[in-house]
Length: 319
Image (tube, rainbow, N blue to C red; front, side):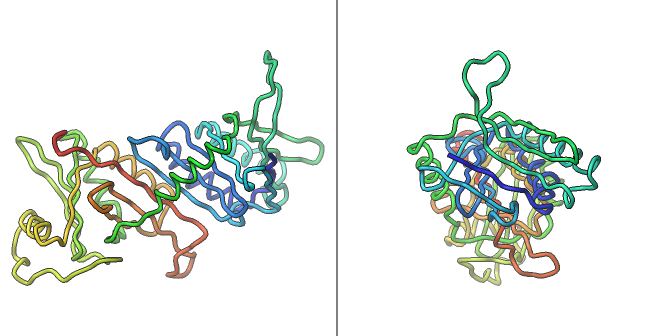
């Protein structure tokens, strides 16, 4: 089992300034899955509760001279502490900048190694970052779990494949600030968020208690997938009445999610996506948020990077 590569300047910037800060907010640990063509960050994928978060990078986005081999179809997976990984990447970038004028003149190598830590009798696996200066090398070791077995990798891959299913209707939110501000102000009002998405392009987010009902609404959003025109007679109705009528017609779905989970998913905006798509899985299985990244200077989707979250839904009786 071997993995070794050099990180590109763009790859280091993506991880250090955008994706690792977001994953650091999502949870303490995550799985890394390395394949011949991609690298995946997988948060909470094997657990039934909590927010699932999946980031995928094509290998050439992050790495040069990418080499991987294993007896498991050249797939390697392990778990690690995101904060330690983030710290190692930041430290390596700082060292490169201070001693050799940046990553352009001193490439950052990443590899899997086994080392014998102090006061231990058994070698332990590490993900190692190495920066070589003119007369010396600086090494940052990130401890990792024992690499997953063949059956564990298959389990992880199966969970990843099932998490890629798209909701039948997705609505596009260009600016998440309104959602972020609403959740920030309302997180102390209640614990449960009602989310309604219609085929007309409406997204409603609402917090209800026995004393108060507060919400925000986005209308006439771009729709991908199943869509329909809103009836003319619904135009002058309240948001609540419109959503109830749309649900009754089968033109909308509504689910309840944890305010804490929804707030955590918004941390993914630290990755600086260009927009986000919201959708509800069939039978209300989960709330899915897909973040879109564009090729700089164009309106084309950057297919080399993907990121999405799946939020578990709550039993209506938990409200």
